[in-house]
Image (cartoon, rainbow, N blue to C red; front, side, top):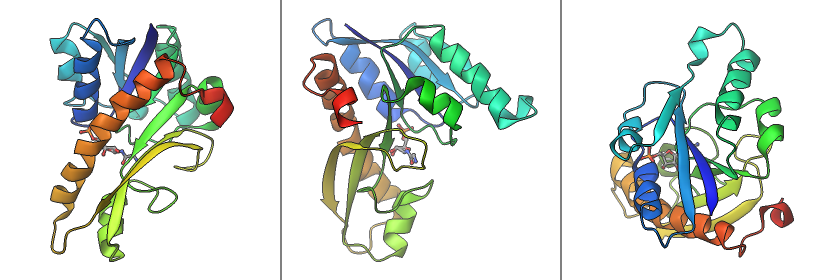
Length: 195
Ligand code: GAR
């Protein structure tokens, strides 16, 4: 059974999908805890399922490194096999990444290396792109630069809004996340070999 800590910053719809998948006793993974960098709405999904939560807010620390050290301790306390960044919107320092990578994966709403950063959906629309998609990748010390595990492409409909397009992407991300976690648990995806 693959054990997971999920980190979020927002509404946690991907987290919710993974929690529901893990709730099936036949699914080969379980969520040990959910952490956030703010009192994120998505923490409620964990609370509903009795999963423990923690919040480590950067504003309470004098440096990013101090914040990341406490965040890392909070993650390692649970001894996870895998850490999933599911809409975690803070850039993590190298000390955090190197302690966990390659068993640290991130969801990103574009076909990386296109449109990295915090506004991938907006940036794809502003660039006039006709297609975009979702990426799950191993986190490395760059911003959205780590080795790609899986990607899925979708067309961008003319006139679609940022919110509509992001919701379309999230629909494919949720499926992709569950499949990738299952394949890591089953040994079909070997993170050490991709990294
Ligand atoms: C997801 O689309 C994820 O790819 C994105 O945040 C959203 C979280 O949605 N992450 C990034 O943009 C990271 N750069 P959710 O809170 O509904 O799961």
